[in-house]
Length: 280
Image: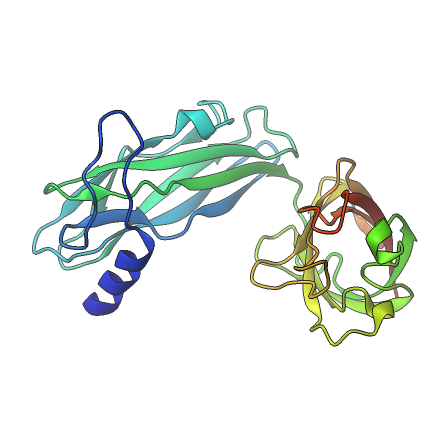
């Protein structure tokens, strides 16, 4: 386990500082403190609080407890201080590689538009090096949603949009049956679909993700690690549209999705595309 951890960290966390005062260069011989992941989502039910645990790791093991100092990366944080709280230090117990940082968020003026909290590692006890890679927590207000809400078979229909390079073809097809499933977050729903099926390509179907947020739908696009498999020298990506889609709170019969098509503009200007999901 120790060898695996060190090899992984050496590959991913070698860094230097670009500040006027150069930080110590991590060369694999020191202890490196780091976040085990770069981002997470913290959903807070309206007028309530919620917590999330973030793992903080060290590249070496120790016979005594070690503390890692953590603080806010203010330049990349939009959340106000009355929304979040967390301890300034994390303890990595003796004989362990990892400790846990618990972040608490409170609905003090939160909305359905996410606020970001960027965290950074300042130091680790014993003279080690803190990774320069931050961890971003996306904090958002949600309305409670039952696990069975907006799940099951739906008919997916293209409404409008598309991009010129694709001949304005429906990017997710149209008139097809998809199965909505719960995602990682309580508000997330995912369905599997072949992108640009009218082209007849052999691209693998991908999972498309969106969130149900108090009467609106926010399209996330294809889940991380998967691709559309169609594009101009790359794969076309999808993301949130400027105008969110909609659904009726408490009624999952009809759902509207709006999303940005070709967000990286590998085929031209980004388009806005609309779909409907109708429960079967």
